[in-house]
Image (cartoon, rainbow, N blue to C red; front, top):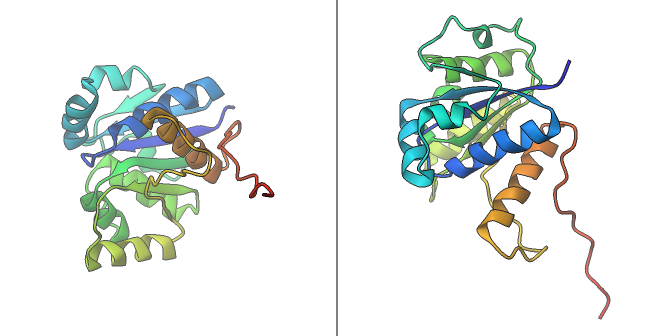
Length: 190
């Protein structure tokens, strides 16, 4: 059975990360299960010109956020990992406080309770104290807070290269097979 990745998309900026994750997962043979919130749909349209059906076409299976009876709402669904890309501060707060009021936040709660990898690509700046405390709470529960901050040591030539490398780092962090991020080779002697 191929690894299963649950991908959540919220209304925070950075919709390109979700799109790239889904495309890369398909290349790697990773089965994807997608949940897009209404604000996530708005942001996908604003930032990438995509409609819900277009992003859903990139996943193996998609679910409505209100479908709290879906298989993803149970620990018996054998997901390898979950990523919320991008993750709004509202969703971060819901995850930090166990507020599973929709399928996305319930699925995240399931990942935490089952001790499976959950990664939140939080998008906000600057952080206020509530944001920081919520990140701390998620980290203490075993989640991974991963603001998509690009690496520059490999001298990326475009935004596309920065997004691609960040996605590879996310896949590697989730221990999914085939991830290939740029690696630091050390300073070259002068």
